[in-house]
Image (cartoon, rainbow, N blue to C red; front, top):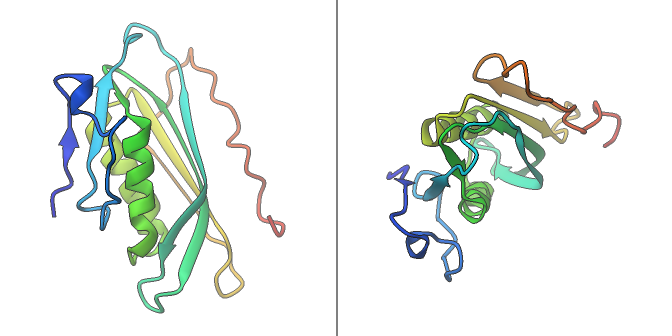
Length: 157
């Protein structure tokens, strides 16, 4: 289990622009970060993963979610290809909805040390019950516009 964090010396050290194999698991996935060129400014960056998948740890059946990740960067930005590879590494990973959502938020927080981060996992129903999971690091800076996640409450999404 590596849970690798990577701060490249140059852009050539990034996974971006290179053939990169799909990580076998979230634990072995490498997340890259790059310097924030606007570290003196509060702003919100949003990533939406509308087709996130993982496996139920009990039945092995697939679970599906829409993930919305909002963060106010400080010195670091997450490199988006590495984030995509990290998120897709959950496809064969067995974990409950709560574990997947919170683990992603914590891993990104450790990597980026953002001023603020929140993640919403809007999970499709299993057994007739949708489970939506929300986690955040604290209060967002007052000067930042924090838009609605854009995912409606469950009504047969």
